[in-house]
Image (cartoon, rainbow, N blue to C red; front, side, top):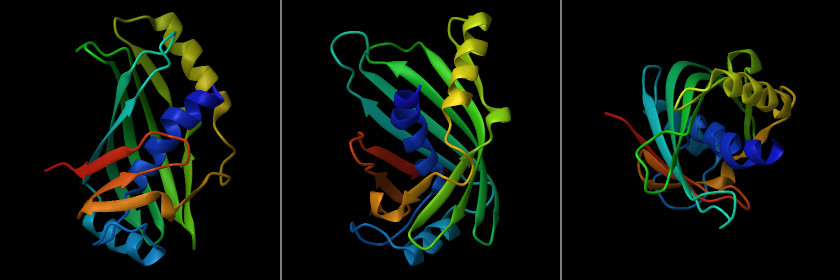
Length: 179
């Protein structure tokens, strides 16, 4: 489950943090403030990550993340997040994860927290027994509240307010503002 968190939820949480700058350099806290202004409450951030798979039991998968910004107050942001997993070559969703997330701006990154009580999982085709089992395992793998600092340096602006998240040892995540 830690792999799942690091591979799927970590990049997703960074995506909802919504960062900004006018160039392609890694951003700073000041750049983050500019980007937050570009994504006010009510905005929707749409991100995609291509997971390559391993040629064995992990299939190449497109991860689509949609974060609806619910609140921006000072250094605090809250969002409702939906992450959908689509195997390459298929239009059928294999799994969707929904949760509420909050992030607090610090000097060198954001502290991102996922509300474990809000986390739900659904499979397609429907499999309610698996939904609950996977959701419980994912909840158990979340880092403790206040311990997940995500550095601003992992974010680069492509075409404001679009950006790329490049976490260490993870595939890039491409994000843009839905209209």
